Length: 205
Image (cartoon, rainbow, N blue to C red; front, side, top):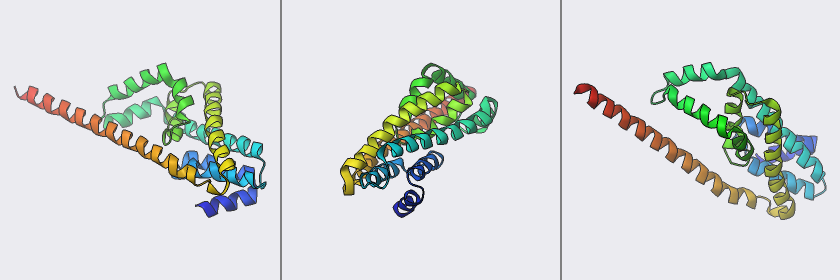
């Protein structure tokens, strides 16, 4: 992957880093924790301007987020509810509760979500489903992405040849987030199965 990123930046310069980040939003297996520090390291060698890297990577983040927002908007609330009604263990009320929560906290979620591994990409979809005002979504996404990108680009810039250390340390945080998500899913499934058992017992009486 590193060779591909290096080749992209050598060919396109800072716009190549922006393109990589846009693709990272659409395909999370392309981690920004690798792209951004590597772009910073490349800038430290004088092959790209630091400011150019920050501008293009942030632009790439926004473009990728807007693409996923469009997916959510095209999917729409009715289709989401229809899909939820067919999923085992999922209730339409779960979606409605999520909608109510997003209505209260959507702006903070979009802003801070841009700085959380995994959720960085996913948060754009519910924002589109809920038709969050596009100017607000774009502004919050730009601000959150600029903070995240700046931290990682500067880390790569100052670490130089040791830029890959960023990925190692952030990987620990990513694993913690994944573990928390898995735990939350297991708890949800456990609670929902327990509710079903209680319902069956009640119906037999």
